[in-house]
Structures are given as C-alpha cells and as structure tokens.
Length: 71
Image 1 (cartoon, rainbow, N blue to C red):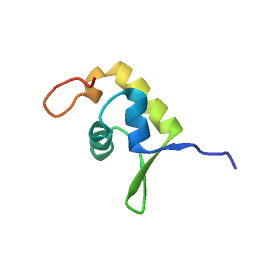
Image 2: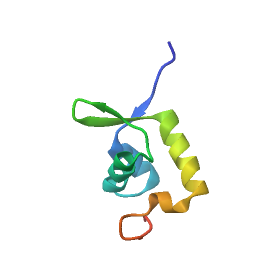
Image 3: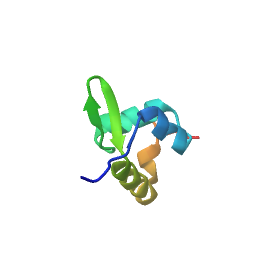
Image 4: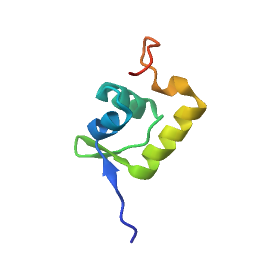
C-alpha cells in the first residue's frame, strides 16, 4: 500500500502563509478536500497540491469572506 502523507490545517496554513481559518473555510466550502478523523481535519498531500494548482487558476479561492487576499 502506498504511504499517504497528511497535513493539519495549521501546517497547510503555514506553508501558504495564510491564517488557519482560511484553510478551514476552504474545507467547509468544498474547495479543499480533507478527512475528518474524530474532530480533527487532515489534508492528504495530493489534495493539498491540487488545491494549490486550482488557486493558480482561480486566485479568488484564497480570498476571505470580505474579499481580502491572504497575506
């Protein structure tokens, strides 16, 4: 079986230099696939890479509710 690598939402946010709430919003909206284990989200590396590629196509995917870009 292939080894799967997972990130926490905090780790994903750190990589993208955005706030964790932005990652949680992306998960809840369905833009970022995540696995719910108990009450904790885990993001498979492949899904995170796909999310990043989609953001290049549609930069608004990383915008917050008020239209501010992530810093």
